[in-house]
Image 1 (cartoon, helix red, strand yellow):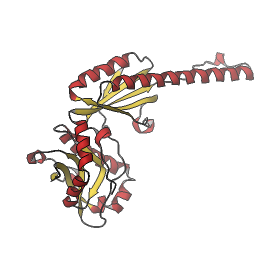
Image 2: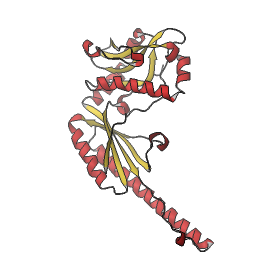
Image 3: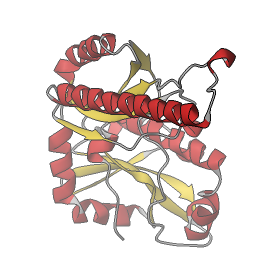
Image 4: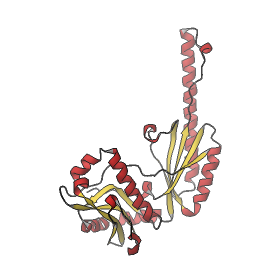
Length: 274
C-alpha cells in the first residue's frame, strides 16, 4: 500500500555561523543557484516578511534577506535554537523560499540559519564555495528529491486468558517462541526494506538512507524500517511514483509513504565551516 504525503523533506537542523553579535542587521542566506533573473524576486519575502534580494559573484547567485541580529546573532541563535516554535517558523520560511526558487532552477540550499554580516560577506561566501556549489548544482540539475518511508507493523503475540502458561517452564518456552517470531519478523522487514531501497535506487541519480524518524515527532505507528531520500530525474518522476505503488502492493505487513517532489535538501544542502 502506498500513501502520498506532503511533508517537507527538510527537518530543522542546527544553526549556521553567525559572524556578528549585538545590535544591527545581517544577511540570511537561503540558497545558491547559477543564475536567477532580477525580476524573479519581485514580491517574494522571507523571514520577518523581509523582501529577498540577489547577491552575485563567481558566476553564482545567492538569495538572501535582512534579519535582526538581536534574534539571529550568536546570542540570539543560542537562545532561539532551544525554542521549537521559533525553529518551526524559521524552517517554514526558509523552506518556502527554497521551494519557490527550486521550482524555477537547480538550487543548492544553505543550512538553516546561515547568517553573514552583510552582502559583501555573502559574495565572498560564493567565491569561497564556487567549486562545491557548481558541482552540487550540476549534480541536481533536472532532478527533484523524493522520500520513501517503509512503516511495518510488528504486532505482538495475541493471547487470551485461556492461553496462560500453566508452569514456569511453559512460560519460558512461550517467551522464547515470541522472541523468535518477533526477531524473524524484524529480519524479514529489514530485508524487504533493503530490497525496496535497492530497487528504487535503480531509477535515481543518487539515493541515501537516512536514520529512522522518531515516532514521537512524526506520530507514525509501527517501525520505520526505511527512511530513504531519492534524487529522481524529473522526466522519471511518474515512473518512480508508479514503482513505489507496485512495491507497496507486495508488502502486506508494511506500507510505503511517498513524499515530494522537493528541492534536493539531502543532496545539495551546504554548510559553511566558518
